[in-house]
Amino acid sequence: MTARVTFDQELEDLNDRLIKMGTTVENAIDESIAALKNKDIESARGIIANDRVVDELEKQIEYKCLTLLLRQQPVAKDLRKISTALKIITDMERIGDHAADIAELIIEITDGNVYEATKHILPMTEVVITMVHDSIWAFTKDELELAHEVIARDDIVDNLFADLKLELAEVIRSEKDTGKHALDYLMIAKYLERIADHAVNICEWVEFSQTGKHIVNK
Amino acid sequence: MSPTKIATENLNLFYGDNHALKDVSVKIKERQITSLIGPSGCGKSTFLKTLNRLVDLIADVKITGKVFLGADDIFHSQVDVTLLRSKIGMVFQSPNPFPMSIYDNIAYGPRIHGIKKRVQLDEIVESSLKGAAIWDEVKDRLKKPALSLSGGQQQRLCIARTLAVKPEVILMDEPTSALDPISTMKIEELMSELKRKHTVIIVTHSMQQAARISDFTAFFLNGVVVEYDTTENLFANPKDKRTEDYITGRFG
Ligand SMILES: Nc1ncnc2c1ncn2[C@@H]1O[C@H](COP(=O)(O)OP(=O)(O)O)[C@@H](O)[C@H]1O
Ligand SMILES: [Mg+2]
Image (cartoon, rainbow over all chains, first blue to last red):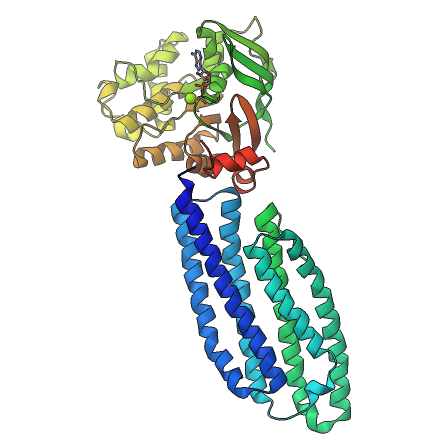
């Protein structure tokens, strides 16, 4: 049993780093949605600059995982946990990228009331935020049930996205002034939908880490 | 899926009162490498020695159940045990060459089986040494004592000696645990060669070795085969908690 003490500490440390990266990504997406609501260009710039931090954390965790694979030659659950961490950081990094993408669009949108005009973007942001939060929680706490719930929530996002597209098409047709930003909002919504997909990916890896089965949901 | 080469059915073995193998039923696949892992004293060597009836030599051993080599029951009264042991060869932990020349070590088995002609023996010695990847290292000194070779070379010589009687199955009991990393690597490479013509069963204490070289792995614990699966499945996704605990170093 004593042989495992160091390894268990290393795994604990890996988990802490994943939580840190997860929290950083979560903050980025929270802030970009707040900036969208408040048209806060200053904050949007900060989010873009902060994306570097996420990239740096990804590199550190990747190095940590490779070192553990080399030194511990893990098997069974340990092997799955570490290889899963390597996959999940890629998804977290993409979520971070998309938060920055949204921030860039916020800077583009200088005027407009389209945000008020669309009923669906607000609930969409709310569901996406919980998906990101819960997917990272599910992985770091080994909560398979929660992972399944998050995967199920993706349908809500997809439906909201479909409704939002119709709504924005209506905006483009009716109001010429705000119409030019409608496409920016469409892209923001698309990024949100992609973020939800990455949260689903994370949850699928939670399933693999726990059970050895990697089931890809559409 | 390759066919079964050796099948055991409810194999039990007792050393006196010591129940060393308990209801072992496994099918060993032909021309595949199967690793046996598990803590010391759990019955791995006993299992190997049962397959070529080396356990017959131990007093007070009782066996129940069946072992088949192909379609043949190895415990059948008509079985020629010497012939069985040439079909199922064995390589041990510490290299044990005979105190004679390299050539005579290899020719020993064939001579016992009645081969006397020099050309024929020469041919067997060469092909066996080549088969054990040691020919180039010894071809110029076949008359030198086998004990003058290094440990790693001695172990490959012992493998060549096993090959000389054209076995179908090769049993290896921790064949690299006394060797340095380079010699170990050579033996491991040799095993992937051997599997083209032979069925290989190896006992190893190194989980990494089992993962590197074998197609199937059986986990033994207290005489029981707890789990037997493809090496990938057993190491990446073991089904039994005891396997998981053992391979991840949580006990033993
Ligand atoms: N020749 C023998 N006589 C009596 N008991 C033996 C003999 N060989 C092994 N045993 C016993 O059988 C059990 C299994 O031993 P063994 O097959 O050598 O295990 P392993 O190879 O897994 O370390 C142990 O309890 C051991 O003490
Ligand atoms: Mg042994």
